[in-house]
Image 1: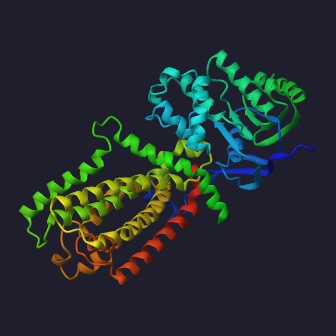
Image 2 (image 1 turned 180 degrees about the vertical axis):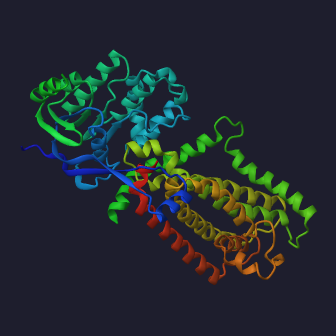
Image 3 (image 1 turned 90 degrees about the vertical axis):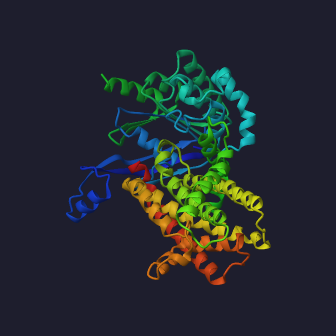
Length: 246
Length: 258
């Protein structure tokens, strides 16, 4: 493979301690730790996962609920630190994990554009250049001075998608976001992701809609209970995935 | 080290936006807006100086100024630490989804309260002019105690924000603590009325030390006392180091508890 590696996931395991009893107060914690009653149930959300993503790839992560897809994305995004192993990311990353996470509901849409842009690492001047494009893509011309708390969920996701896909990040992470919005907007989003791919952006895509994965991705990682069940081309894995679903 | 600086530079625009957001939200829908940061300490000063110059008679010249300067310093400490305490919890939705250096949230809270401090400091200057008190050249030294105050509050804020993620009790406990601390700081009373057993306790309070330096340069036409200055610098550095240590030790676990 002569294309450069963009993301290297190297034997990543992720352990969560599910405390069997929850304590929120200091007193409880002290008493319980003195009595040695603090017990944890270990839960491995990811078990020794390794794969690489090359430049220009569109990698789909599929699997049932609880298979570790979101945990995988979070470790790649740098939000979670893996318990074992390492994740190396080369290049800039635009996370689209759960739309609107970076919004402050009390601020207006316009103010949120700049706040969210800063979260993605853009300066104010750069954002001013993108601003017209964001307004136009999200189709929210008349609502830019309305606080986001008054938006419908569709409006929030349109705005968030428009912000996250400005510029050309090296890596775009898309988690279950295309399932929101109406049919037309979904098409628009897909078109935009495609045009980003043409410019060389690497895509990480998580979806339960196997059709979308088929349309967008060229490689697939199938996760099952934290293990990599299969890794390879879209066509072959998709058919097996659909079969396993019965 | 250079890697940390690089990372900070990348997220410096975010710090600016976060500070801007804090201030915008605070004064959204109020007619006078940011002017409140100036008016609030003024009104508080009027109320307190009326109460205290009639109820208790302290041997202080210019009591309103004495009081206001005390409030400027102490309120900054209590507001900035209280606000940084919840910095991590309040931004949970963001921290869970996107990688952002987490200390930025604490830093932005301290900075936005610092902008408030600048406003209440201008209120102090206004009152000084209105009361025709002399402005001495020592006023030029005022950045020193203010800088120490910000550093000290930031250190405390970092520790609080990290602990609060695990133990929410701190939020409730802390308001009691700041009230107690206020009475252990000569905000409304002069040091001279303290009984001898209490005097050393109040004097050992780091905020007292910084406040006394602040008053020296603002009101008393004195330059900074080298011993106090040294003590304050050491205390600030220690608290900052402790804050960074506690914060960095715990920050990877924040996400599991918020």
